[in-house]
Length: 134
Image (cartoon, rainbow, N blue to C red; front, side, top):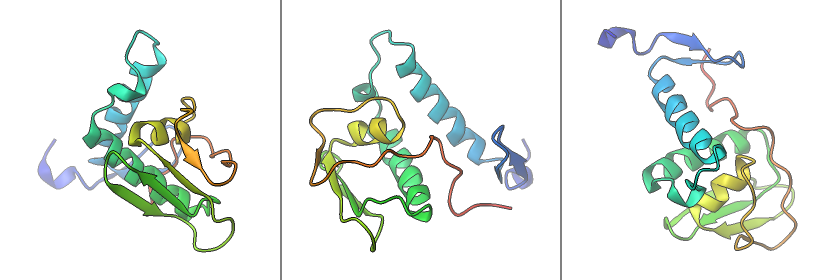
């Protein structure tokens, strides 16, 4: 692909648009997620830390834009925290990054996740990236 075309907007099957370069991120997300879905011994704990960090950054930015009712997410193994909502419920969720991402992606819940209140059900994943491109 010529370098000048990487910023060309393309459409996801779900209808939202993004630059062509974002397709590489979407492909990796599909690869990692469906590798787990095959249930052949590759679990969310196998996800590489760089993938988990990127996917959490992307997912939590989108959830914050959709006003997901969680105040804070703490990935203790990654040394990262995300503030989502300054208003509404003050739910804080703590755990390993892969377990947090798995929960947000609808790929199971890890009993080691800790929350000071019941966790709300996240919207269908993946969400369109934020900020949206048009």
